[in-house]
Image (tube, rainbow, N blue to C red):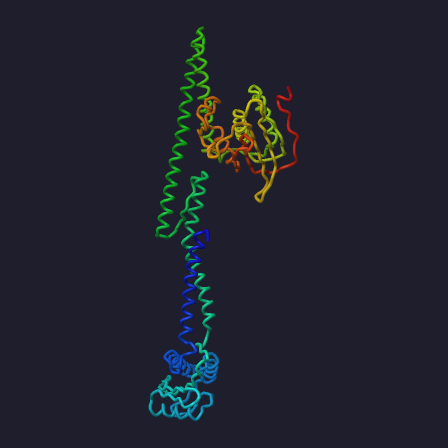
Length: 471
């Protein structure tokens, strides 16, 4: 009962079942054994059956009439006989003397007669048949206390059939009401995961109710968001391109100033060069991110050994980490073959490892592993990078992969980060059909896990010696 579909379906079905049950109880009560012979309900039943019997005789003949009369007596307890206007029985049922006298009175009077002289009450009615023929129906009513039911299907079976039919109708109604809401939920989840093309509406849908209007408004909102985000991406790319030329001119303008032999001028020039190099790095990353978002599907991919690529990145990163009294250590490297773009995956791995190098404590290690695994969707290559730094607040773990996100502005300025490296990693991994996640380690530090679909996973490879171990 957690979903709207089952709430609507079961509620409607229970109401329908209760209505059918109440109707069946009222029907059985209306024909209860306490009805006296000749009461309105039983009288209507007898009149109906008399007309049916004469109609069957005129259409199908005496054999069909006898079959009907036997079924009537078995199901309702009413013993019915049919005689013609001369008092001659046309049914095979034997008439008692009292029944014959009652039929003769009806032939003469042309109206219904009743007799209570026999053990069971007798009713006789004139019945007009096809072609102007006149008949008399003599009915021997069941004794009080005997249940009487209409011929044909039993009420309990009718009740069960009604419940099944109402269940099918309620199921279709519930599905009709909740199907668009389910589509809206799926589209909302896709939109929250970054799929700006997600829509909840269906082509040629003829609904014109409030739910259809809600879905239409959602699709308009999603289209507007997609348009705004695409415009923002284009703006970032265009601005990044335009900033390249002023930076180049600034560096050219610094050339004459470098010849001035003045400590203050030299310090100022070095500061300008440092800031322009940072700005140039940020522009480079912005252009990379913009290119990935705009042309990611056109990247050239090939089969490559992820374990070999990872060992190259680890060796280069470890060489750089030595200056900061840190190490990058491969703890486990499985053989894994993936389909991807080598330079793009190299950039993704470098961004994660360099980010870990910035924040791990001095004298500690950045631990890197590559593990082959599989699930119901296929083989997987799982890369984990764990540092021994302060970690990240739980509320900020998802935001780490957003462009320009900074956990602490002062700390980012100190480390030289601009909040684009992990965003590029996420985009690159997504283009390879993978995922990237960050989590805090209980005893301190942050671990980033990259999961990629793999072609082949093999045995463990001995980790390559790091640059510090070679020295």
